[in-house]
Figure 1: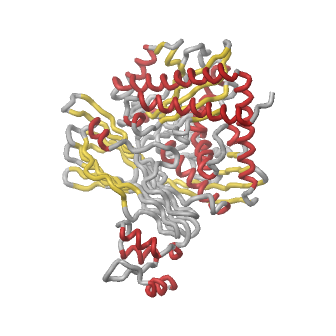
Figure 2 (figure 1 turned 180 degrees about the vertical axis):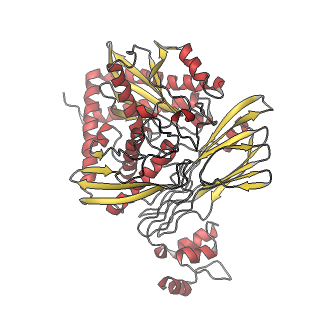
Figure 3 (figure 1 turned 90 degrees about the horizontal axis):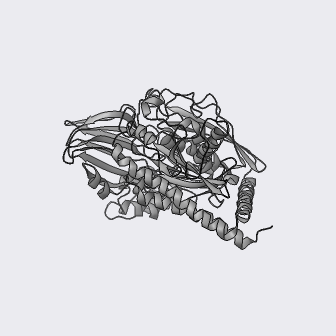
Length: 579
């Protein structure tokens, strides 16, 4: 049967709605602020045959698009060859092994088969960032780990729920290896509840339209997504586009890592080749293959957001396996920085290459750091331990039409910083400062957006802080003559002294006491186009709003402001810009 356009459109929206309801359920029911408030999670529907993506929630993290497809496929393959127990209705598998299609260990995936007439129709899968997974430091962000075992508990696919019942032995093993274990039951139940809601909603669609009709719609949607992506690629001029992006350091060896990318466009396909990138590194900034693939996919989603999310959208994107580089991590390489940081450097390399081919569609580099700040300690007033995880936004890059977004979410997600009020209620901290970080946007015809500046004080007890951030050595790249955005900064104030991490954006296990403070400044976005072409009145507006000083207006944009009143001195500006 051939589906009519209206039915196909309705089913496309219905499948999307299933995933959106799973996302909402997960966040509403979770205990941890990183899921409940920051929405560091994602849900999707995957093929029963090979785990390929059918639909993903619009409010889920884009970096999990390719990752959950990879991990679901791995579960299916391990069941087929006997490395996993075969599924039964009500079973839910748990897995966080990075080398089996994961990211870092804190991103824990659940996968559940959905049955129809005694056969698996599809898989539902979701990922949630647990605030702690054990390991050497609270929060799992071990900036100087040299093996994955130092980062936490690693789980292959095992049945956490058997026929709908939580397995007490598996649960006990998990709780015995992580901090603040008593709070995990809330996140586990929320994660499972999201899948059960998805199963219920999906069954409703199948009952209404029939299994065969939905199967046909899924196949047609995949075909159309591939066709649409191919049409977009066909409009790109043939050729090879080169770029580089840099990671500050691996946290162990204080030298930058290079991501070298060549994108070849031929016909209606793009081939991504990372040959020439740095070798596997000693520290935790290695990226597993699933994360590397997903980083390319999400970057292309930024460029062509009109293409519906499904496995079909990835078919014209050929990513050569970057063997022998830090972008194809093998056991036991540590990987805690791959999902939140290296993934964004990969996306930045894609943007830097593609802006040459599509200057009207691609932006300058965004802040490109999740600002991972983990704080663990004991709250004597409440008589309990805690693990706090702070993520933060930064500036987006300028583009051909306008300035970059200020304090936007990370490139890889839609996660937002948890509200200050929630964090102060949940943990013994006080945010002494939380504001726009003026002046951090890279200069350009369209400037980059601004980052965030915040300062946190420890109110009670002892604590340990760890950071896995990036862009502390190199700011986000400008494009087509635009300047780089400001770098990330971290300063720790303890015992009356200031401490800046030797690796600038990475350090672990910093001992803190009540009254000590941590100050963070997130990067601004890169500028787009020649700064001397920026409308002088826009520069004046930025100065009036306090984004730049009058001196910076002259230095960065060649705009001279009159001394007596805030106005543009047109003659002096023309002279300065003329050189």
